[in-house]
Amino acid sequence: MQVYTTIAEVRQVQQAHRGTLGFVPTMGFLHEGHLTLVRAAKSENERVAVSIFVNPTQFGPQEDFARYPRALERDLNLLRESGVDWVFAPSVEHMYPDGFQTYVTVERISEGLEGARRPGHFRGVATVVAKLFNIVQPDRAYFGQKDAQQVAVIRRMVHDLALPLMVIAVPTVREPDGLAMSSRNTYLSPEQRAAAPVLYRALSAARARYEGGERSPEKLREAMRTVLTTEPLAVVDYVSAADNESLVELDAPSTRPILLSMAVFVGKTRLIDNLVLGQG
Picture 1 (cartoon, helix red, strand yellow):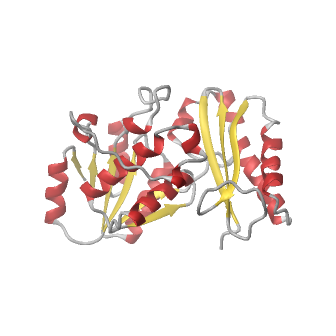
Picture 2: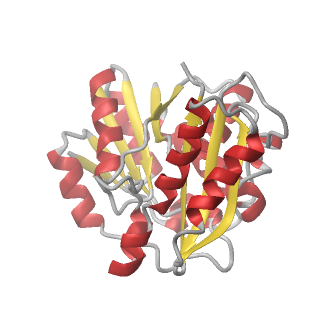
């Protein structure tokens, strides 16, 4: 497995090889969720590349960019064992050199949910992903469904800018107790870790109501809130029942798939999770 740190190196390796390329963009501190994306990419492509880059432009001023967990050598060993062909691990200065002033904004679909709570977040995501796509030039790119709005924003960007690749969403990978895997889970104390699965229990309660015939979006939100209130360490940022395509919050029953999602603070750690209802 080769590790590259410059755009010129990646461009050179791309010119020298043929065959489909699957790409997994990450911010590192890899876990089984990331490795599941790698396996999906390996199953559908002749070559697989991974990027490791903690992107400063998607973090707000009071967010955790400085303390976001990093473990590059550990990550590289995991990717080597997983059969990845090459890794792009650039510096911040290389991706955002002096004078950088071009950003990508995806409008309506980025404005609610996470976008409303984290101003500028999706501008940073869209910009770095667009730049990575331009550098790596993959045939397929793989993202986790846990970040549902991120997937929607990237798909919209790829469609609107006619970028020549497919965006593949891979189902959320969970711990045995239902907690969605996330690099930020490492912030949780043992007590907080025991409380964190309340997110999945809340989503599951709303799904059970839906499967029982409930179609009122407010009743589904109420089912999630009711479960979340049973956990003293959980502080709700938002719960949502939105159209799965537009991400517009629903105020009436819908025949289209519904995205249930939430953001919840457990201690100082902000966790997100989601489920899609009525799909397939």
